[in-house]
Length: 169
Image (cartoon, rainbow, N blue to C red; front, top):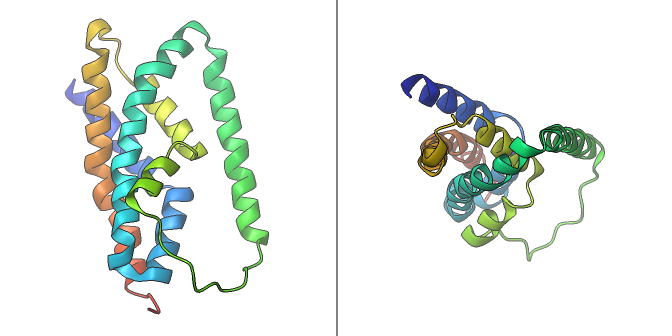
């Protein structure tokens, strides 16, 4: 069990620190709105992401055990989305400034996790790392969720804190 927890912890660190929509949105929010106004967004990501991981690992991975091709299509779709997302960021043109802009709220950031394709791939992959404990799958899913929560708090804060320090506001 301890070895498995180490694998989950390392996986969580890699997932939280690798580029994706959460990291980019948190950095931009911290730059545009400062550290204090970005904190609800930050907590929405840190708590919303683990909840998604627990729920996905309990449900879709059981389905994938019966239909193994689901795993392939989730990873393929997620990879294609991230590639297109990265290309879009490279060629995007800044829009006009709008004084009505505001950071995401806790609820908006939490709900965004269900639209985050990278999050789907990570949640599905985390669920596939669960040991087959039979009736203890629920407990293992909770352990994964708690691990992601504990890891995400400092990992995402790095992006918010350092970028918030260079805020122009």
